[in-house]
Image (tube, rainbow, N blue to C red; front, side, top):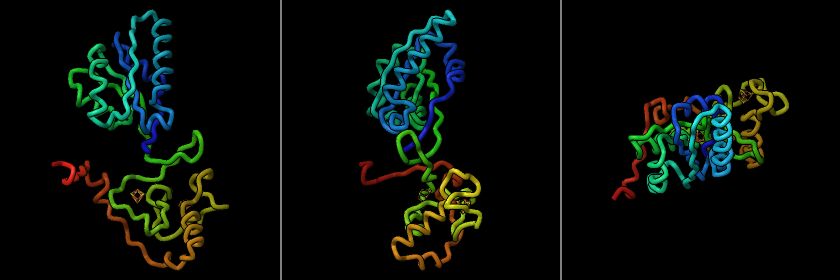
Amino acid sequence: MIVGEQKPIKEILNMTAPHHRLLVLGCGTCVKTCFAGGEDEVAALASLLRLASRKDGRSLHIEEFTVERQCEDAFIAEAAEAVARNEAVLSLACGAGVQAVARRFPRFRVLPGVNTTFLGVLEHRGVFTEECSGCGDCQLALFGGVCPFSRCAKKLLNGPCGGSRNGKCEVHADTDCVWHLIIERFTALGRLNDLRTYVPPKNWQPSLSGGPRKLIREDHTL
Ligand code: SF4
Ligand code: SF4
């Protein structure tokens, strides 16, 4: 999932200050799972903004609305009437959702309420870890399903750096050394010898380093 966290309230207050009618727009998918932008977070943030505006003697009307996914036009369309009743939208989606909403409503200001952080998994309740950088050429088969591009601080492809202690990374002591995990995986699979095969430097061309990417599924464009 895409992991993000709500922006600091001060930043949100500054961004929204010029507006008197504001739609707080949630997204019911990734940002809901990471407690940044689902229905509950929309309600909590709207209450906070109402309180802050009352305290500052500012007139502010807030409307709340949540769609299932802000990155899909079919769902964004459901918010059209609510958007039309307001001056600006504070989107609690990831950066893709914010841009999709801005594209759909070109005459309205669309503000980001969330800092989009990484592609990750829910490790346990309230803890999310980065696991994928969206490199565009997945090589997980070479590493037993554990990604060193995203999870090794030095992006090493041919074994550990030697600094790992007790299975933890020397760069971040609270993070598992990804090469420790890879070796554990191959040991459990009885395929440790596979790791003797040299992995050449990664071609980063299909990644964002090659510029913005587009995926076209011709079988679905007809
Ligand atoms: S190899 Fe690339 S696509 Fe696969 S998990 Fe790692 S960063 Fe993501
Ligand atoms: S300790 Fe492990 S995860 Fe950390 S930089 Fe070295 S090889 Fe990479």
